Structure formats: C-alpha cells, structure tokens
Image 1 (tube, rainbow, N blue to C red):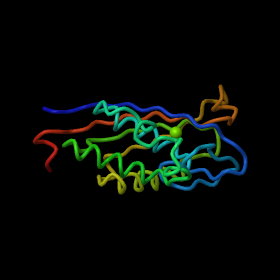
Image 2 (tube, rainbow, N blue to C red):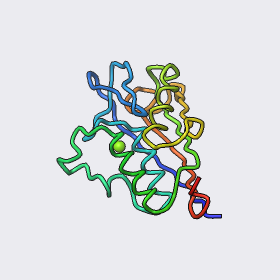
Image 3 (cartoon, helix red, strand yellow):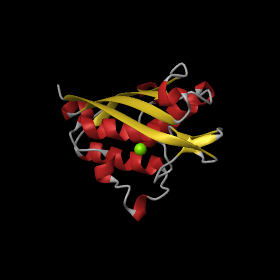
Image 4 (cartoon, rainbow, N blue to C red):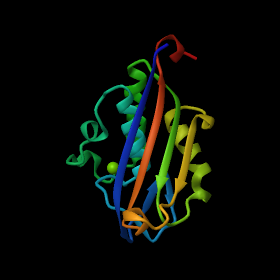
Length: 164
Ligand code: MG
C-alpha cells in the first residue's frame, strides 16, 4: 500500500485595506494578507503539505516569491500546478484537512465555499476536503489580528490504488 502523509504550515501578516483570500474564496474583511501572491495562506499551507508528502520541497522552491511570474498570482493556479506535480508522480489526493487560525472575521459562513473551491481545483470530491477555522482566544499574534496562521495535513495515495 503506497500512502504518503504531508503537513504544511504558513503565516502571513495582516494589514488594513488589503483583500483577504482564504481557501480560494474572497472574504469580507477590514484586513488582508501582505504577500507577493494573492496571499491565500490556506492554499499555501495546503501546497506545502502536498509537496511535503512526496518530499518535493516547498512552495517557495517551486514558485519563488522573488519571481515576477508569481506577483499577485491567484493561489488557485499554484494549487493546480502543485496537483499536476502530484499526479505526475503517480499519486492522487486521499484527503486534506486544513485548520485556519484567525481572530476575525468569523470564517464559518465561508467554509462550504472554500471546501467546494479547493475540491474543484484539486479535482477531488468535496467530502475529501476539510476546512476548519478557529480563533486563538485573543492570544498571540493571531489573537491580536496581526496575522493569519494555517495548518494543513494531506494523505496521498499512490501505486495501483491511485487509479480509481
Ligand atoms: Mg505564503
């Protein structure tokens, strides 16, 4: 049985007046992520988990933030390209579980759309993609709304089981 596990972690600082993108969805918010790309910290953590599962390095290695090609890029494109690498290596997604830590705004109204959007980009069923949101009870940089922090875990399935 050829299964691989990966974890990803990302943080972006928040600033007033920037658009906030999480899980491929535009979120109504006074603050957004400071970033070279669109700052979708949830997709970045997910990409790192996918790459990590196959020991392919990280998102910075594949999509350098020093490159003009990736300036302001829609992170869904980075996720699609990451999935091409995964599929090219003979694997498919088993499931993904993502936890977003953010003090405000409340993310619960956006969870379904994030799951559907991510599943579509990854070419998988929505039942294989979990997105959870938590505050940090006003503790730390997340609690002070200085940043957004995301943890992602994925399971990849390879070999004969990769063919459905
Ligand atoms: Mg990032």
